[in-house]
Image (cartoon, rainbow, N blue to C red):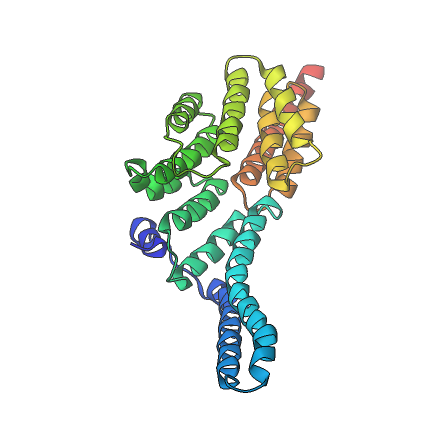
Length: 291
């Protein structure tokens, strides 16, 4: 089953007209132009066969044809990177999910539906829709293919960290370490190391070492190479551990203003609103006491 069909069946989510138009402009039209150009070059080369120009054409038109073919492949990768940047740089997983869904609907030749499911589930994770993401990826949990297991446990580890579920995150790290290495990407150890680091930071937070956890979170959030989405996420995590009200308020304000459509922004705004209401509630009591 294709990724798009699976998403519609499990979650009922469907591509919208605006995102379909974006895919048509940014991907479909350009790929078709590349295909037509490649075919035209091929016809021209064949039409010159048997003529003195044939040898020259093979050195000029053939490379152009190859470039046209690979341009179509490049466009697919370029669109995928653009979708990733919507989360990493723009903190807009809602738009990323919409456009990902439209691309999955259009790209009928998607050879590996698992990657499509992961991409959409990853966007759901950044929206705070952890249950929906897990539901979508559930079929990959028992798939004997190590790649399926990696995609499933990798996503579930991120969700567990977001939800401050130390037990769940520990279980996902264990599952990732137990996967057979054959058939997995070379960057899997790096992903596992990332989840181990997240587990250790979360353990400090939940085991009462909040000052150390805050220092770790701030180090990631304020790192020179931190992506905007990570600055937002780890600033919110740091706010959970900061004892100083002013520092906590500053972190929450930053997340609320810079978090875009991520769950982090919604959570930060909710906490800031609660703090404001608490101050208003406490104000009359303080005034009475002073009198």
